[in-house]
Image 1: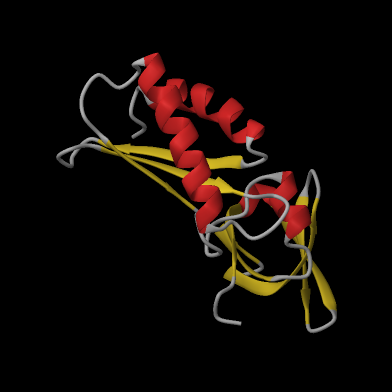
Image 2: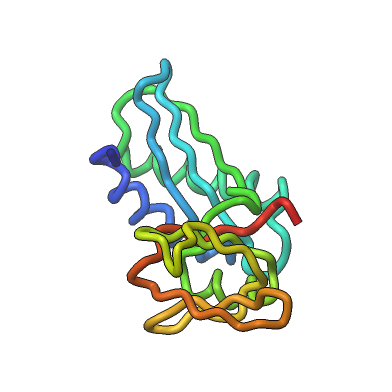
Length: 153
């Protein structure tokens, strides 16, 4: 369940990221820890996300959050890259990772198979297309539960 402050934090973080030519990939507020931990995942669309990107975003976002006084108590801010093993969800991600090995999970199973592995060809309004050893496969979006990069290859 998303913490109620997360949408407000995202509203503050997105312009900060855009100014630094970065993108917000995810925000999670872990209030079950003492002090609570605000984790912000970023991505640099121009190159691999590096420590410098995380540091710049951390400093800029910390100042913005402190000025807005959104989080009333002490907290820890963690800014990081989500890594390569994350799910593909946006059009930009599907375009960026064309040709990369992916795993597509389906439910109910599509053609009696629940997991499909292959090179990502594209995604359109109806399907995700994979190349499996030279054979194109169209998997209906209505049956897809997850598309993620395949780290096994």
